[in-house]
Amino acid sequence: MKSASQPTSSSRIALPEGTLTVGVGLFIAGISAFIFFKIGQQALGQDGFKPIVAMWFIAFSLAPGFFLPVEQEVGRALSHRRAIHQGGRPIIRRMIPLAATMLIILAVIITIASPYLTKQLFDGYGVVVVCLILTLVSYAPMHLARGICSGSQRFGSYGIIIGADGAARVIGVAVLWALGVNSVGAFALMIALSPLVGVVGVGLFGKLRTEAGPPAPWSEVTPNLGWLLLGSLFAAALVNAGPITVDILGTNAKPELITQFGNAVIFARIPLFLFQAVQAALLPRLARLAAQGHLDEFRSALRKLLVLVVGVGVAGTIGAFAIGPAVLKLVYEG
Image 1 (cartoon, one colour):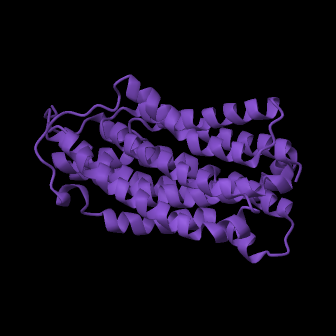
Image 2 (tube, helix red, strand yellow):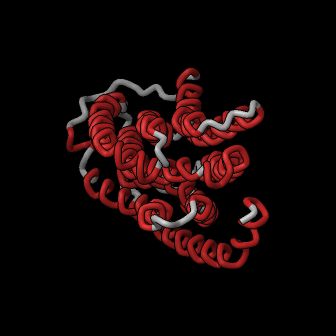
């Protein structure tokens, strides 16, 4: 007969709790990215959509690169406190000024670089620089909210935040297209504002509440933040730098070619959405298992993650090579 303190059959579950729930939100986000790019190119043309492509990939290099580690540390710390029956509100109070400081630094750097960005990447549209900063302003609280949800095991709310971001963006650009709006700034603004929809929604339903608890020293919330920042920035750059690099180096390249390259990158990133669903649910689980001393189950979950990463990577690479060109031609006509 098993002791109540021992891991139960949950150790045999292939995927962490919450993976499928988060996966639904990520599926909506992935599909919405395709639709956003399709509608945007229908409304602005592939050449006119190029500044949006540049903004998209810069935003999704910077926002996850800097704020995903905040989300992960919040989720880990809250899950650890949850396992030892301590409230997590002091964790959030520690992380808010840290995230705000990073946001201010990024905004200042972008402002300083705005003349170059406007001329070289955004085809003279200074409003896109403003929307880029607004995008970071929106994604900072979004990642903080996601960390609260994952660390509190509110995976339904986590999925809603992700899915609502994509859905709101698509609805917004669909309305713009239907009204005949062809302003680059208006389409860029949809990227900037959509992350707040899900955050406000789950917040109004009380899903971002945390309990009072003992004070949180910096050592509790930042033990691995430096390494996480380094890894996250490199990962985000690796995933998103392609279109930006082509835009910078391809001085004679036609704008529509850069847009088409961005379309291909969006398609190739599909496997990442599958992994993110596991990552969001697994990190709090690992923190909980470590806090409870269930090291055998901890190792088992980590092994499953490694197998899943390799499997998704291989399947995604083969799939993109096999059907990628046909899908791009069908969806984007090139």
